[in-house]
Length: 277
Image (cartoon, rainbow, N blue to C red; front, side, top):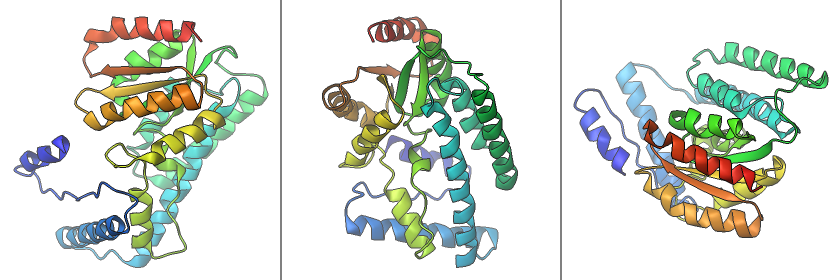
């Protein structure tokens, strides 16, 4: 909500269109409301840019994005290997960079070639990661702004980040948009089902964590909570209980911001966390 209020100020400088996201993804009326919001956005874009967004154009965009998701999932899956085919720090930077690529056809070619190259190197026994490195799953808030002081530190202290379940990770990529139903219905269904902490209840997050911890053979979970992201702060209690009791894995919550002032403290905590595994 605090971020939504910010758009009132941004609206004084740029044209804004704020979508009203329902908070209960399991309610049928929420799906209808979200579908209506997507239709309103479509109409606003058509009006402002003088274009017609046809059903076929939406279907084609869905096909392109689904192909991208499949490639990104294959790229992520290289971290299921033991040892992983690449460091989590490098994986994160590649995934982040993909968000700024507008030419999706070229991006698909680049990812296909990169995956092929990494698989060939791995088959030759070329992995940069020590087989004894502790396998860490990252959950929680977006990690781009704390990449060095959390993820890089984990990998300098004897760990390797094998899975990014957080906002900027695999969460949105895992489930494809259905191509066998009305495209607006498919988009509404897909994006309302993302297990974001703003949803209440948000049981999907724990179900997804359960699946990923097993798939990626995780040794421990690091939960990143950015200050002022209150929904993730509240959920950290449930995540800790689940990881410790249901999965029997160690859990570390790091509450931080984009300032470098806590770099030393975070390093000390991460060192101790990995040493105790």
